[in-house]
Amino acid sequence: MTRSHVTTHVLDTTSGKPADGVEVELLGPDGPIAEGVTDADGRVASLGPDVLPAGTYELRLATGAWFERHGVEAFHPVISISFRVGPDPSVHWHIPVLLSPFAFTTYRGS
Image (cartoon, rainbow, N blue to C red; front, top):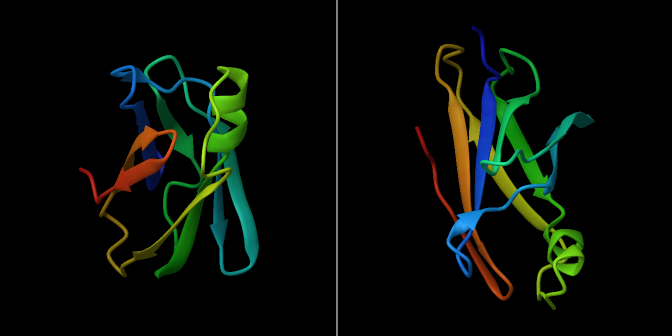
């Protein structure tokens, strides 16, 4: 099975559970590339093509709408994460996000 060059995993740290139903968008230098919604495990495993050219990209998560659906007031309506894809097309880019109503953390995953 081939997977996307970019994937994400969103966890709600206030509940200790995956954040299912978060709308996610992948943007490149020329605009939108792909969009998805986190599944029951908080993952978007198919976000964009198998290979992206080297460059700077943005992962945009609609966290405010997600928290609102859960009756929680949140500080960040949208989380935007800029990251750089290197020239090696065999490298997978996984971007986990730890989410709470007033903070988030992200890192380069595997």
